Image (cartoon, rainbow, N blue to C red; front, side):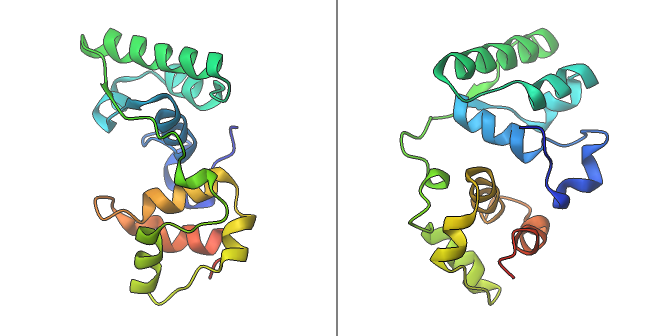
Length: 150
């Protein structure tokens, strides 16, 4: 999984920001990686986090250990932990999260269930993350456009 979204185009060449596919893996393995951590990483370490698999239990554990090793190496302390959702919303293709629906309604857009069902888990993850009130939402509309929602 080393494909980037078009809405990430302004930073993927340099990997100056954490791409969605890495954020997806971090949520999967339960590590709260901050941008401040990411900026300390070498290009090689960032690229490893992009290409390293994080799907099976063994891969998830290896990914977690690698992230924590790199963070600790650069900062002296491990990254924080995130609770790992047992049933993450991005894996449910039948139910659009209410927070996401509220955000789309706020901008005059409706995501139909048929559209939601055709999205990949990574695309659903991106929309959920980009719709959160705590997130800078500048890529929300570009993501909706890229995923053919609007």
